[in-house]
View 1 (cartoon, rainbow, N blue to C red):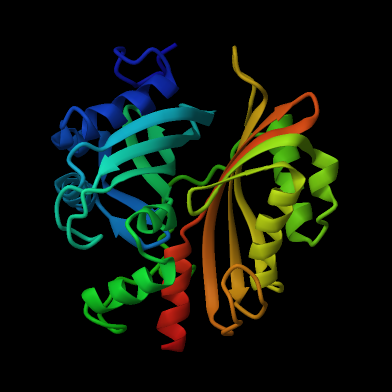
View 2 (view 1 turned 60 degrees about the vertical axis):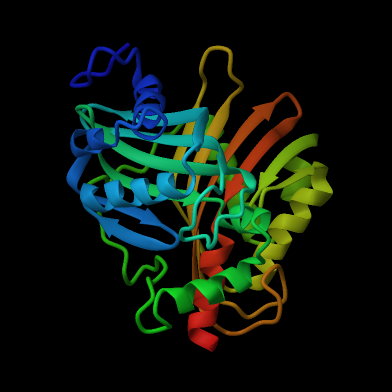
Length: 324
């Protein structure tokens, strides 16, 4: 049913999230951001912190100018909350787009892209008022022929050099928003949060214990994996790069919905020194903050599908800004 305070044209909260996304991007009703997004919304991406719906409108138009045929296909909305604490939707999107015009990704290449996004949006009374968003930047730049490190270096130069460039999200420049809830207590969310906590605590045996042997993985960089070895390689490569970094779980949702398996959405972070060999190469001692989001689906033999996003280009940007 339509949540209290929301336009009755939406049949429920996920319908609102998927519907306004299509209206804004594909139906070109960009001006609706004036009322769908609050005036002082804080939108955090790994690449930057933007305040206010005017910045969101500008960024939306710049993206559509560069990728005019972009689609945003809603794969899932995992949500929690109510009209009192506010609703939080973790919306997983598969996007397709053609790089038709020059823009932030360089000269138009004509290449066709496929990549994922997860957006955590806090909403009340038909308005989104707080947001965390991760786009799979390394999948985009790899499909355009760049390596993420080279793209990060080039971006710093195009933005005016190390002093003038847009700074990636860190705890120092993050802006606390009005949404303060932590999700819900549903078993699926707690189970997935526990699995991630164990893995980040170097208990890699949690993978064969908790993941279905036939699991399907969608990982940063547009990488698809299967089974325990691929899960181990990914999580080991991340944790090994930042072996003493602090892992923190910021938001946890679990849900059971009709026609769906039990599933979870977790927003997490990793903050500390790049002091180990792993997916980010030779240790640089740079202080790095990683915002991560993950969705998981459970089946009779454990975790059967996992979707993980963080922005490799923003990790490299932090490393380059500190090491030259």
